[in-house]
Image (cartoon, rainbow, N blue to C red; front, top):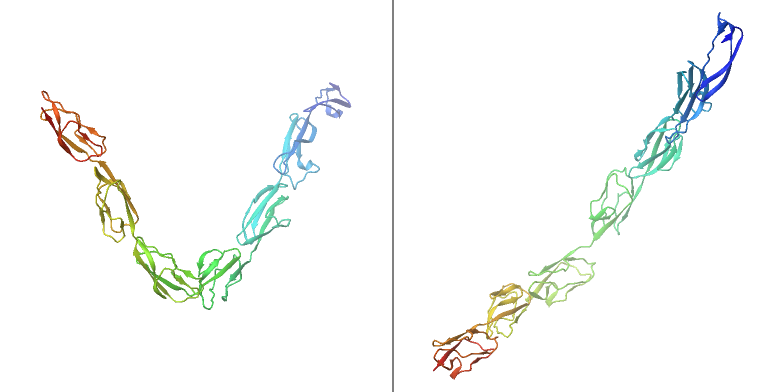
Length: 473
């Protein structure tokens, strides 16, 4: 409570950052008729903090730009124009406006301005990259790709003095930027190696923009043009076109051939790798012997040859078509037999021209022939035919098994345990005496025995069926 009159007061202000001392004066007229009035004066601290956006999109820390006390209900009006060094070209403006109801701290973000980067494709440019909006001060890298047939030149445009870097980095300006990528047209050379020939009308240079160029073929006295070789050509080609849009230096060589003569061979079914043509420029050609299955070459006859000759040379400098005939005789092949002691009348040689040869079975005492094995035979086979037209040396092996011979006994009612068969490979067989009830064995008679013999031996290596009779008393 204060008494009416000229009044002064002092007090405290409630603030966000603590309590501040304040003082003011109240005029008497403001008090009315009441000699006493209660004055309650409250002010609140108002703080504005700002942060700035960096060029890379990050932000600075907040810092105070306003820290003042306002009466309750007062209006706070703040904007970026109140910042003494505010760069309006770089940053977007910002403002704060509100009525005071208490202590308050307001955080304001000030973004950088963005401007458009426009990229233009100048002469000879295929593509440009990284156009778009960018923040002031932001690092920007633009890249250009020239078309085929062009060489990179430079960038030109907004405040650019002609950068030669194809990939160009700069700092975004405070304003729209327009850049143009530029390239220059390449001129390529065309070189010709005519090897003594002549041609008119073929260009010596071209560019990627030049229309199709079809090469004119050269001429050379005494030779025939066989085609161009060179850039982009795998084999001799008479019609060569440099298509519009092509690039690169080019080199073409004219190819020639002298008049070609034929060499004809009458091989009667044989084969040869000898050349079928030649020219006057060739080195000496020595004819190699031809080949024919089943035959031996005996010599050439033909152009310039009076008798069969195995060594024929077409000398360098020769001319004219030539014809040669190969002469042959049938090759004799051996037939070898592995008979293991046997005998055969089969032939020991043959030729490709022989009729079919059917091998006869061989003979071997004491053995039976079971079949041939050998050339072209997987299992023992008795019937072997060497077909007419066959070739190559042959070898056959006769396979045998010991012949089994019978041993027959006439025992007249007696009994024996002697074997009933044998082969030439068996060990000696000594016949034991047979038995007969009521009788005494007096000896054997039979195969190869003239008189009764009690001791009979079939010697190892014997052959033939045998018959023995037991004699009794």
